[in-house]
Amino acid sequence: MSLSDKTTQSDTAVISYLDQRRGKIVSNTGGWFPGKGVFTHGYSMLDELVGDKSYFQILVLNATGKLIEKPLADWIEALYGCLSWPDPRIWCNQIGALAGAVRTSVMSATAIGALAADSRIYGVFPLLESVSFIKAAYLKSEQGLTAEQIVLETFAACKGKPYIMGYRRPIAKGDERLEVMEKIGQKLGFAVGKHMQLAYEIEKFLLKEYDEGMNINGYMSAFLADQGFSAEEAYNMFAMLVASGVTACYLDTYRRPPNTFLPLRCDDIDYQGAVYRAVPD
Amino acid sequence: MTQEYKHEQVRSRNEAFAQRTATQIWHEQASIDNPYIAVSALCHGYDLFELMEKRSFVDVFYLLFRGELPSEHESELMQALMIALINPGPRHPATRAAMNVGVGKTEPLHILPIASAVLGGQVSGGGEVESAMRFLEQHQATNIADYFASSMHDENNVCGFGRSYGGVDLLAQELAGRLVKYAGAGKALKWGHQLAVSLEHKGIGWLLTGVAAAALTDLGFQPRAGGCLFQLLGAPGLVAHGLEMAGKPILAMPFVSDENYVIER
Image (cartoon, rainbow over all chains, first blue to last red; front, side, top):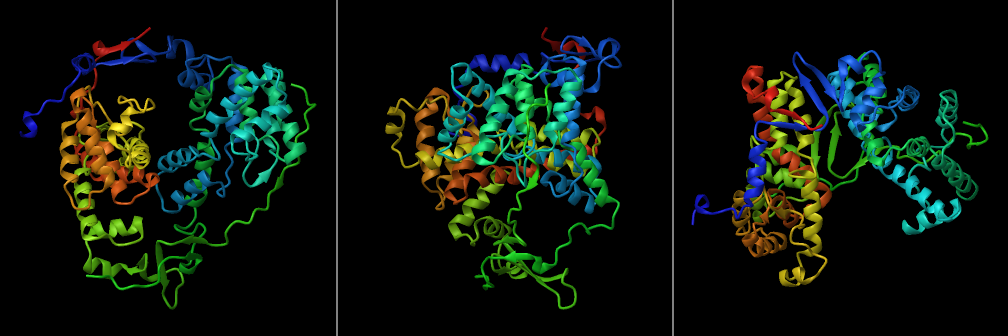
């Protein structure tokens, strides 16, 4: 039997569902209708949002469907500032610097650098784990567990590894951004919420027993949990969190002679592979 | 927000980072008067120019990732797979992303990074290939009947297998059926073939990602590499379609009318 004679055993309901969507967009978000307006999550963007709401209010609306108040948007904007460091030693930023050294476009450099922050150990991706952790930890505390018990239970679940996302940081111990964000939060009128209170208690125990404190990821996770955001919403709204720092690093190398960023001699690479061998015919 | 919380003083961990980056893949020999200019390159010990003269692209591709040149049978299977995956086709979301880059007059150099990212999805993409490779590695030694006898295993949730647009993907079945006959085919392709045969009457079969996963597993690649390789092997088709559209006006692709744009509110 040739392939063209074979049947696919298909579910006709699926084909019907797909046919109903051919050439049609069905959105629960919004869209642009020339002459009528642009709509997002029930709001007319140009009539109700642009000019009246800040960019970060619109960003969070697009990312979560929630129109947040200006102080919260300002807090999120400040957080973006905390993750926009122009230091090319940071892995995502170095991608921007390398891109500048070979003259890609600034948009290419910024986009791929931002993508690199989809990392298991730094950047934006860990928010999925850290927001989930503090939310689950809070539920445990509601059931009567202490911060110490929560920490030890979490370590046990990780085969004894003393590690909780949001409470350790590469390169340095401690995080200078916490006190800055605390002051900004205070200035914007935010009180310490229940998740943040627990996060501080967890940090206190970790500092005492393991000499490891909370990092900016842990701090923002607790804050965002107090504001009612889910882990996925947090991840979505910070998708481009490191972009500005990447741009800065790109421009620094872009303005210097090409291929001069951290130049490598041939023997700067430590070759540990097979020695020369003849290619078999 | 009160200031009663005292955080630790920021200090460097002073961790011992490597002084030089190490690799087992590539060795460049410096010229006698400029340490930045190489005069030869070894790939896992083989001189690049010797490889050019004596081996195929497929062999050197395999060498690059596996560290050894392939056997004749491995090379045949690898080449067949590379041809089969060379183009995800104009309906695949990754190819459509490439076409949008092209028709939208975005810099053509952006076609590949944009479209290959879409080809890295958890569905119909590299993410699914990686998951399917882990699934095959775990189960390929299990008897098919025993596999389904376990209540743990749901036939509607077999990674790398399933319904494509509601039915069996005939091209994927055909591809698997051909690859399994190659001398280089191993446990994964053969086990997957049995699984697909046992599920076909239910409208479930190989997905293309599953076929890729099985072949890559039999060729000895690790699951972590599998997803990236799927992106890499589909790249030619993505770029070709993107470039084709780059030469056409923006009207060359459909733009959904307002009448066919429905906001669910």
